[in-house]
Length: 83
Image 1 (cartoon, rainbow, N blue to C red):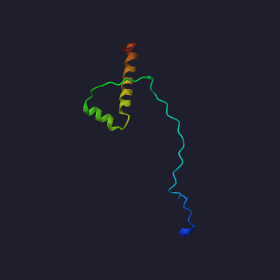
Image 2: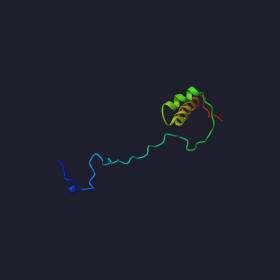
Image 3: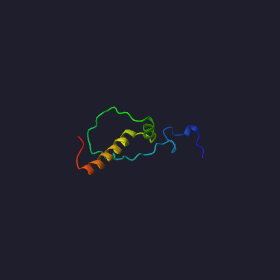
Image 4: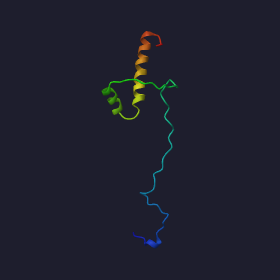
């Protein structure tokens, strides 16, 4: 059904133009056990770094998680923490 232009409500937003309501989400808790991070410079093989970066944003966090897992596995075997 067509409505003449002079009878159109200019403030009416078409349903397909209206933004969809967004549900607020709670922030996901961080899985980190260490609250402090330190900036360091480290050299990686280019192919290995490209592989981590290829998985998308967060590659530094993924590398940190893998190193933390390796550290935890080796602490269990030796019974001591690294210096």
